[in-house]
Length: 167
Length: 120
Image (cartoon, rainbow over all chains, first blue to last red):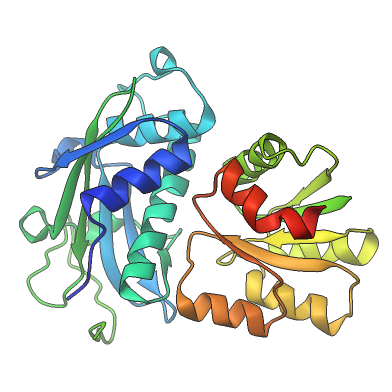
């Protein structure tokens, strides 16, 4: 069973990274309509899938804008902004670093994979509602990959050959 | 002092530049590489005093770059700045010759504290 960053871990990590005040509240199931662009696969040193991290688009834009020092009124959440999403990916990468340290495991985002393949709203293990001061809030959720019980959103899942636990 | 920053994220390289300046390291002449392979070529061709590398990067990661620095006997102080600061990564970096390992997220204060000796 994976150990997940606490709300305090997430708040402190993002506040340091973004140099902004950050509040973190209990999350909910992310809005599926908002997950199209920011769902990441987290893999280990052997490229085995370990977790999925999903970020609602407005939050991804907020994280990216705060990193890139783009003012809130310059962010348009109706259209995915590639530059802000690339910056947001780095913020998620830093949070995945916390996940790695908490589990003493080598974990990183697989840049070539789309986590929507394995996303399951019913299997969320950790969810945070994150607000970067001045920007729109949103939900960031993490689920630990388990071989059984995880359904692909749109297609038959392509499962790795073996999945072993962290323990 | 000539410093080479290696990270596959342009925004992280920009943030590191900014925070090094905010930490008071105004005397640095900074160049950038976006992966280990590019960094290795720059080290071969140029003169650098310090190289700071990310860990998980395409086209040669941080560990491999550190090994090349040691193998080629480059006269440079090399270390890591990475979000993936696990015990194994730190040990691996040290074995490969890293003089420092700074965890992301960094701040000007942490950079000042952890790199003062290296960047003076």
